[in-house]
Length: 117
Length: 116
Image (cartoon, rainbow over all chains, first blue to last red; front, side):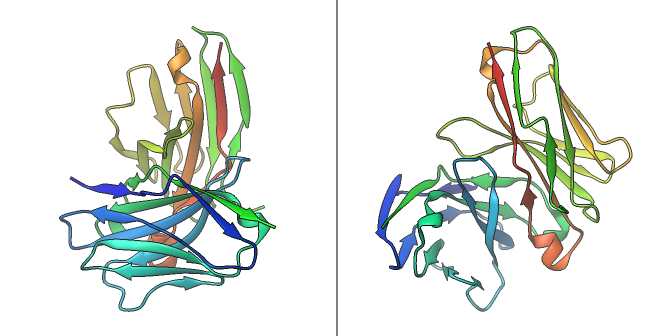
């Protein structure tokens, strides 16, 4: 059964340092997509980065990069040069199937990140 | 603002009352999703529309819940005879047909429901 596991309930990082948030997934579908979202205390779910199962290179978006290790079924989010505004809840999510057949996302429980000044 | 918008942002209602939430997706997006999120949990899928067709509905969606997208644009989620267990944030999301737009699912700011 499809599943997303985020094993870190909470993480702390010093401002300007890098931090890695862990995510492992389980699926039997060879085609899938992996997403990371940021949810600040206001509640909005903000899209950060996407990685497709057939993408050859790891996805990057500004200070965010996704360390995609397909054989290990892991999709860790790396945030470089942390800022105070990065303090939020971070969710890893997975969609099975190709993008043209967009369906529901399966979500992890999230990791709460606190950036210390 | 061209993002996903939801209304109202906050709703407090008495148990047994009906509530309706509205979602306006990104204009060129044909796919629309509703999720529910309770404190300390990730979002749970409720339902999914492609254009005006409701293609998937979670078993979480009891008979008291109904969603519509009559013209393939905005959507409404109605909860009848609300119960305290319905207290949650209701998130709407949309995505496009293919490519980058198809891979990216954008969420609105959510509608907080408190049933007292």
